[in-house]
Length: 116
Image 1: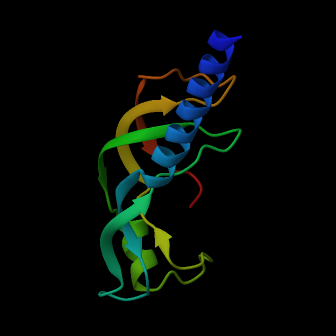
Image 2: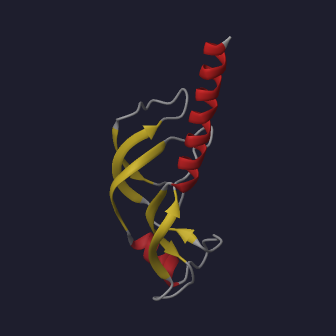
Image 3: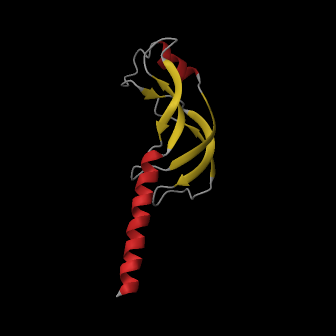
């Protein structure tokens, strides 16, 4: 009985630590806060939570391209609410693959979004 109680308490303790860590993990991001030249800032942002059909990639390098600059300058015809994390190009590795996807943790990948 005592072993089960200690084991159960340890498990709960680890769950609490994971929850606290997940909440406090931050990443750097290019955030468009307002349209125009001064509306883009580099700031801390919470790391994303994986949706059921998505994989999480740890970005090693990224860039702002013409789509990002267009979004900064006017975004005419593209409807996104601000603030918005920019960056549709990047390279890195998969850290949390979607179940059933072609990726596994550690896969090196390049990202180019076709959503824009």
